Image 1: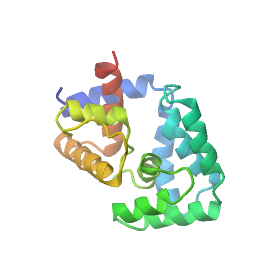
Image 2: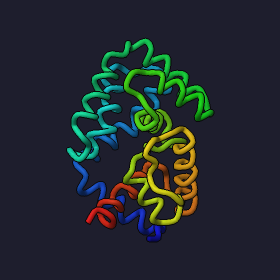
Image 3: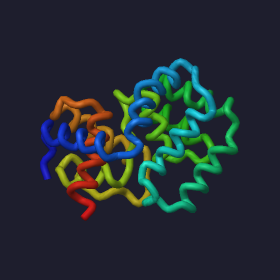
Length: 189
């Protein structure tokens, strides 16, 4: 499978036309980065990101796992969430950002990647098995989605995403939509 700029554009158009969460995602990508970077956000904003991380699968993510993680995050104090997000927003070091976020209840590398994506969509991209599989099938990654997601695996994924974005001259947001829709169109048969 190859991914050209034209392929990404085609998948982005499909994504925008068929994905029910696209309107709210698009608004969030426009507003949340500034809010998260400046500290001008509320609990509902961070809660929405954690929920989106799982609900973007539209029921295909195990409900028990989703609820366990969402419930754990809901027990965290807003002050600790605010501190972790401020730390992540104020650094260019992935390990520092991920360590701050994964110290929060319910946040592992998977959830941290979603938070990082909305903190800085030019620098980070949410990770998931669908996106990983498309990158692997198209030669940007050379292994299957890891059973245990680590910071090193996330760095490997970001490197592949950066390569795709550079080769196609597309943003991470466009690459995300393209990867997601490519998986639905080409892999999920």
